[in-house]
Image (tube, rainbow, N blue to C red; front, side, top):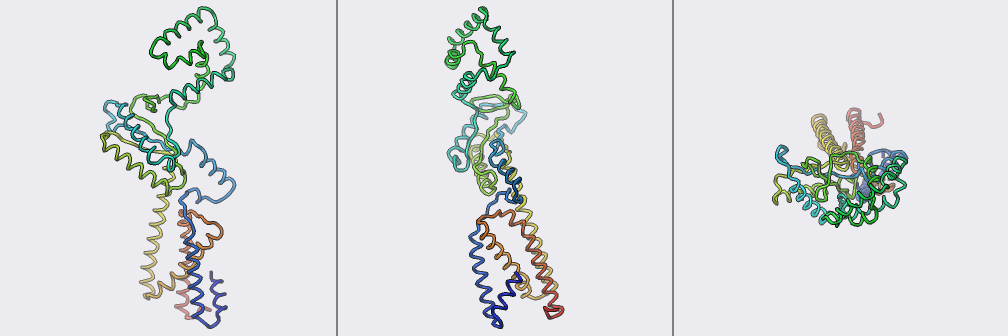
Amino acid sequence: MGTLFQFLYQLTGKHKWLFAILLLLLFAYAAYVASKLRFTEDITKVLPQSEKIDNLNFVFTHAKFIDKVIFNISLKDTTGKSEPSLLAAFANQFTDSLDSRFYPDDITSIDRPPDEQQMLGLYDEVFENLPLFLNENDYRRIDSLLDKEQIEQVVEANYKTLISPMGLGSKKMIASDPLHLTPIALKKLRSFQLSDNLKLYNNHLISKDERNLLLLITPSSTNNTSANQELFENIDEVIESIKSEGFDEIKVESFGSPLVALANAERIKKDIIITVSLALFALILFISLFFRRKRTFFIVFLPVAFGAIVSIAALYIFQSEVSAISLGIGSVLLGISLDYALHIFSHYRKHQDVKL
């Protein structure tokens, strides 16, 4: 920046007014270009750019199990009687509100347990590929099921099921797999279950003690904290609105990586604002007490402001988008520039000559 000033000063010669006009034009153009720079609040943009970091960000951005937000719906009174029907009623109204207000622009999916049609589809898929799931022990067990006595027992059990109310839902499975070989393979899939503390209740995931109901959503933007902040603030308003309609006993807690990223970004922004504000206050107080001249503020802060505007304009030339969080962290460079301006001004104030 100093080299630029020197070049302009030599270019204009002794015409100081021309030098001032060129500086004003340059400042105005830089401010115009800087205003076109778009800011994002993607916290991953703060990290340095490298192949490993980019690969890691790609995994975090596209991994479907990471970008979930989980809502835990429970009763405020943890010692009272469980009311799963009340939790399910609140969850139904909550999902309907999310569907109507935020899907698909702000929320890409609201994950629900598989319905009956999906369960039948899974059953058919396993049945069609049954040999892939079986081993030698399974075949020995199937051999034991093929004797006459076992087949008679299975047929009798199937008949009782078909004439009962359960027959409406199990008719297709019995017709395609009368000996119930598919459940042998389905039991193997239980090894992928991380916890057995959940069960299905009215098409919702609920804990076995029926005190906690879980609801999962996927925000459209995982790392853009400004978009997520608005989304979760609106969701909080929806929750409070539903509570006021007869669900005062309900408590809703949320957690997930998008919420963690939002909290971290908010903490960083608050720390930057507090740090910069305190630093500016200390500088203004110091300049007022030490120099005691009003024009000192203009002389000291003008190069810093000019350098900041030109730097942001230069950023727009190389990339049209930059992280507002990383730009805030870069405010430390403004402190260095301000320190340099104070040093030069103090030197000139003592020697009255910039060449000394």
